[in-house]
Each structure stands twice: as C-alpha cells, then as structure tokens.
Length: 231
Image (tube, rainbow, N blue to C red; front, side, top):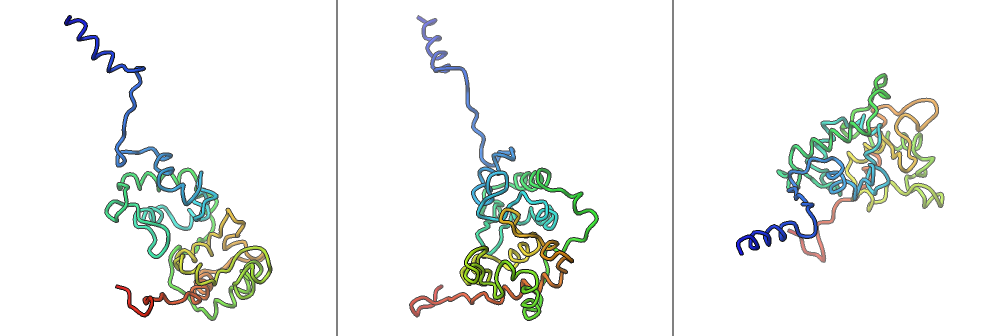
C-alpha cells in the first residue's frame, strides 16, 4: 500500500511529460530580443525599422545621439511626445540593468562608428536658432520635398506631408524636430544633414535656425474647454 502511495505523486509530478517551463520575473529578463520585443518593437518596428516611430536601426541617428543620450531617452522618455519613460524610478517597468542592455545592444548591433570617424557631427542638442533665418534655410534644403511653405503634399499633391501642421507639431518636441533634420528618416527616404544638396552639408547654425522656423508654427496649447479652465 505504501508503495502505491509513493507512485501517485511521482505520476502527478511528471504529468504528460518531463518538461518544466521556467518563469522569469519581468525585472529579471536580460535577453535583448525579449526586452526589445516587449518594450520597443511596437513603435520602432521589427529589427529597429519600419515602425511608426524613428528607426533605431540607423547608424546616422546612433552616431549623432551617442549611447549615453540614447540611454537617457530610454530611461526618461521625451516629454510632450509619445515616447514614455521606461525606468522604474520614472514610472516605467525596466531596471537600470535592462535599460543598459537595450542601449548597449542597440549600439552594438546597429551602429557603424567607423563611418563617422573622420567627420564632424552636429551636436545632438542645441538651443533654437533664428526663425527668420530658418525660413531661408528651409527653402534652400527642404522645400523641394516639403513645399516652399512647409505644407508638403497639399502643395504638390504627393510626397511628404506638412511639417508646419499644428496637429503634427503638437506630437513632436523641438528635440525630435532637430534629430530628424540631422539624421533624416532612412525608412522614408529622407536624407540626413549631409545629403540635402549636392555641394555641401547643413551647418550646425542652419540646423538650429530651420528647427526654430518649423517650431514657430506650433500653436499654443488651449488650456480651456467650454469656457472652463482645466486643472
């Protein structure tokens, strides 16, 4: 009788097979592919491309932003945009170690530092420039795609959309505009700051000026609704 009682628990433990699935707590995940799939792919796309947000699989972008700034963006997010903060101390779900893994592996897999060793990169961050000068810069470097006044496809009937539309500008920060002017959008055929004219690159001042001009079209946020101030 005792022998039978010992056999039953053994059968229950084995079940239909001897494979046991291990459960890993979310904050213990260290595999890059899992971290990227669960936190980044939804916006930045599979393999860092073809998502709604900026491609991360872009050597130009990675060269300009640098790993520390990339890590900060992952950890802290970008205020007033769709990019959330992922660090636990900022309301997200990732540990410092997991954020470091993401930043390290994004750089290791998708950057090409040798391509930029000989050239000067524009600063990732800078103050806004002169909007008036930026209008001239825009017409020199950007109007061929986005139209003389920045309204894009509404002028030409096809091609890139408006960069001065208030709805668009309400979703992007000045830093996001600057990053796009510098790095372009490789997934959408938008060239980086070096390739907008056949003869020369945009200067850092021209980049700051054109960002200021685009940003000047942003409408103030309406803090009232139906005549009542929102809290």
